[in-house]
Length: 181
Image (tube, rainbow, N blue to C red; front, side, top):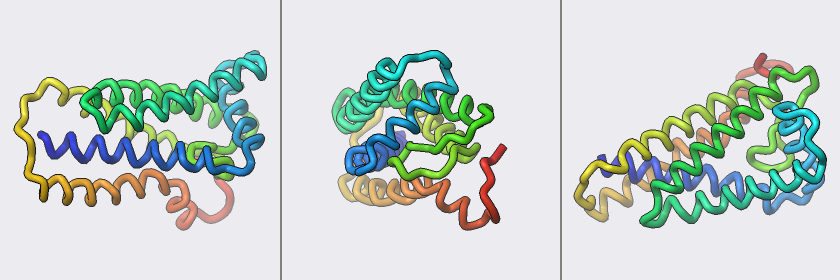
C-alpha cells in the first residue's frame, strides 16, 4: 500500500504544482480572474466581484497549502484539502457546462480552452486519488526501499502529465470546437 501512497501523493503534487505555477506565471491575470468569475458566477449567481476575487485568491492559497502538505508528515490533511478543492472546482465546472454561456477553463492558466466534461473527468480521477490517500491513512506500512520510491516517483509523472494535458490531448481527436455537452 505504501506504493499507492507514494504515487498518489506525487500525482496530486505534480498536478497542483502545474496548476499553481501556470496561474502565477500567467501574464494575463485579468483574464484568469474573469475565467474564475465566470465559473463562480455560474455556480453561485449574484456574488459580488470583490467576493469572487477573494474566493479566487483563497483557492490559490489553498492550492499552495496542498503542495506543501502532501510532501510532509501532514500529507493526509493535504489529501483532504485537495479533495475538497477538487469537489468545489468540479461543481463550478459542471455549473459552467450547464450555463448557456461558454466559460474558459483556467485550471492550468489563463489561456485554457472552454470548459468541457473532460475537465470534470480529470477532476473525478484526482478526487478518487485523494480519497484513496485518505482511506490509506490508517494502514500500517513499512518504509519502501529508496530505489522503489525513485521508480514510483518517475512513474507518477506520466499519469500527472496525462491529467494536466487531458483537454489538449482530447483536442487532437475532436474535430471542431465542442464543449463536450
